[in-house]
Length: 200
Image (tube, rainbow, N blue to C red; front, side, top):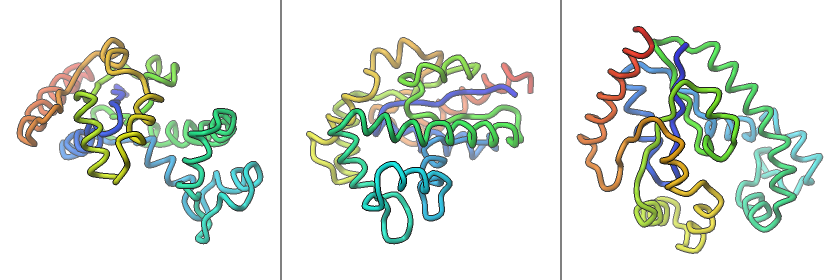
């Protein structure tokens, strides 16, 4: 099946764009949703996380204590790599299962760190980036998550630069103060192109 990797920095509007593709009946495989599912109560990653980091990183409901883990991995690169060594293989296995089960003319893989991972670009037929300025990202994430400007900048610093992302992409959706109608029009155009490329 024809596969499109959808990416973009934090606050770029990936989820909104993904939902617009889903409205066309395009199946979505979202690695962020998979990551949340495997670290939810009784999630398949939780026993290994508890064994590696201790029960203080497990919330009362049995899910990952995200705030505590976020604080740790931002301060400690080794801890981040230990966490990734647990969750990344599970995310990949779940992603591949969902890809196999997807029904539609093509599939959209929503991968926030597609450019950073190094392996994803070779696993999809096209890369589609949702693009906006860094200032727009900062404003959106501060408003949405209640983070400070410094917290948002720290997250952005760990992601690929806007320039690197655009250099590695095939297609771009501009979401720098774009209206929903503008986004819909851009998604409609990309959808028609992907249908054509998929031979649908």
